[in-house]
Structures are given as structure tokens and as C-alpha cells.
Image (cartoon, rainbow, N blue to C red; front, side, top):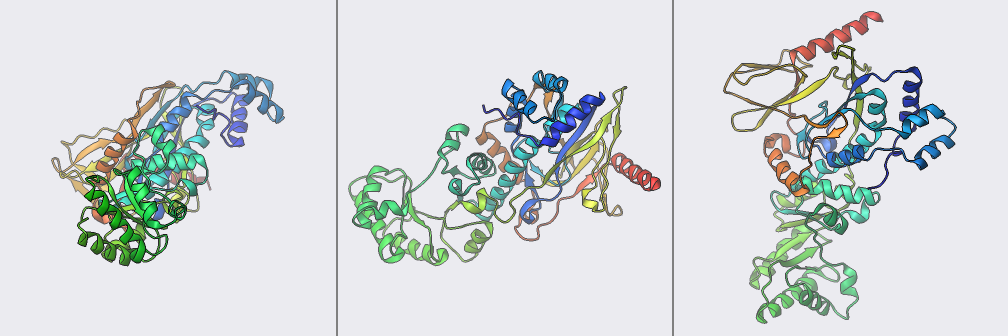
Length: 481
């Protein structure tokens, strides 16, 4: 495990020293949440919690860390002595990885002494923002593929090793069936997949020999890249020749086919499908790569492309059209001596940046078919019973209301305890188990909310008590002005 203790913004440490010097180490509540879903999506996929847990577990300042901080000339000895014995002692709640989430909901909630809560801000945002971004992009790509297998092929275009490794993890969680990243395969026990490059074919005297050699080596994983010279006149015919010879020699293929990496993928796939079928290879896979994203895959599907496996690289691993998740970490409450919380609110001329105050939790409201009706952000301590009616209202356009009668809905609290008094109380599932959970989560979204363009928004409502608290704070600040 790498030492990530100093992977933080300098101002986290200078603020910590400020709190230390003023004797202010009150327990506070911070929420990590996002304001807007990426890529025009109506939802996002929470991801990265396991790495946050690892970070918190290993958060210690060693001698080299202290010596470096001392060398900056900003920190006094008594504060550095405090850091030398630092250990996180607070509580953390989080929405489990793979959960479908929406703006303004706390994905991670920290309840801890303010010095501790401040320090961990940067890494929580770094991890959750990145993996949630890639998971959301991957979910959109997999939705466009309409059940076809999507392979994550982005390592060489990722912004560095960590982005490649943890981006592959996030992509697998959101529905990809495999990754080309061998280290990610080892670290997370996920399937690794791959074919060969054009250089393999070019290194042989001719295309047929290259194909034949590869097929002999990998009869159970034989996807031949057919566009090195001429896809329809050379590549596909040579692939069919090799498949025919292998079949005639008694070798049974279990995973074979061709890959297209250039040209008009719709046209070429339809022509290649006819050629393969005519030769008796109706079960041969046609896979495609070449700068794919959800929009191009959707378009190719509409055009009747016969591609059944999609290798998606650059546009997925970088979320090229929307390269940042935009999650933030905001103070929402301060604990009083009697254990109650004083709510805090951040104001802004931009209404989207006004925060929801207080110590909160999130409930998901389902209809009787298990589909999401709305999410409800409420204050901790508010109680709800499915045997009672439930009034939901839009916190911006409050006249828009829905009254759910008993028996018409079910509730699920999304935030779960992860750390209690500094000790981890949560065990992260395997990546493949999170993937199964995530696919179930995505299935609770209406198709209208999953469409790629202009999707239907999922409502995130506030409880009446939270709404009234927020309005009171807004009114009080307005009166002070």
C-alpha cells in the first residue's frame, strides 16, 4: 500500500494548523456530493469507496512526511508533533459502490473532529470523483451496446497508471465484461481480454500466415484483426480460410471471430457477417474498436451493424466528452456539546451551489415494481413507515407534489456505516459482486432516464423538515444583509 498521507492540498494542512492553534476541534459533518451528472446523463454511478477505505485505514504521518512538512517553514513543532500521532477517529457513512445516484445526495458523509474531517477532503474527492466519472461513462456505453459485451481497452490512453488501473475497475463495476489491463485483472480478479495488433500481421510474410499462427496458439481465444490491408478482399477471406482449416482439422473454436478497427464499421460488419455466415461460421464474433463511445455505438446499432462485441478505449477511460465529475465536499453541520447539530449552509449567487444543511441521510423510494420513483434527502432522526402515506414535493417548484399511499411504495436507506469511531465496520464486496449489484441498480431506472440524449430527470426531494430548516437559514441570512 502506497503512502498517500501527503496526497492532499496544502490548504487542508494549513487549516488544520489553524484549528489546532485556536483549540477548535469540534465534531462536524461534511458531505461529499456532486452537483451535476456527467455527459448529460440523468444519473451517476457511485464508485471508489474501497479505495477510500484503504486510504483512511493507512492514514499516518511517518518521519519522512513530518520532516518534509517541517522543511516548508509553515508548520510549528507542536502541530507537527500532533501529526506524528495522527489517527482518524471519526465516523464515515457512504452509499455503496455500484449504486445509482443523483445530484446533491451525499455519496460520502464524514462526522469527525474538524481537523480530521478537513484533512481527508482531497483524497475522498480525488478517488470518488474519478471512479464515479468512469463508472457513469461505462454504464452509458454498456446501455448503448444493448446487451452486447463491452470491453475496456483504454489503458494506453489513460492519464497515467492510476487512471488506467482504477478506471478499468470502475468500468468493470458499471457493466464491462472484461478489460485489456492485465494489472487490473490481477488486482481486482476481473476478466482480461485482448486480440492482437496490426504489427503482429505486418511482422509475417503474409496475412494468412499471421492468422494461422495466431489461431494455432489461441484456438479458444481467436479474434483476428482483419483491417491491416483490405478488410473485405483480404482480411475476412483469410480469416475464413483459417477458421475452415481449423474446423476441418478437428479443432473446435469456443471464442473466435474477427475485429474491425477502421473504416465504415456498419457497412463492413454487415458484409463480413454475410461472408462468415455463408462459410458456416454463424457463431463467429464480430468485434469492433476505433474511437467508440456511446453515441457512435448507438448510431451503429441504428444502422443495423452486426457487431456483437465492442472494444472501447479512449472515450471511456478518459470520459472524453466530460472529463471531470465535479464532486464537492461541504461543511453542513457542527456538533454542539449536548450532541445535537447546528446546521450550516453555503450560500451562492448561483442557486445550484447552495448546499443542503444538517446531518442528513438519503432514502430511495420505489414503486411496487421495484422501479425508482424518487430519492428523499432527510435529516437523521426523521422516521418513515411504509404503512403511512408519503408526501413528496419538488424543493424548487413546491407546488409539484405526489402523495403516495400505504402499499404504493417501499423505502430503502442508502447511506451505510463504513467507519465508526475510526474503525472500519464495512467489508467491500469483490469487483464482480459490485458489478452484479450495479447491473441490478441500473435496472431500477426507467428507460426514459437511461436514454443518451435529453433523459428524464429523476426527482431528488427534501423532507419537509429539511426544507423548512433550509428556508429558515436562507431567510435568516437574508435578514442579516
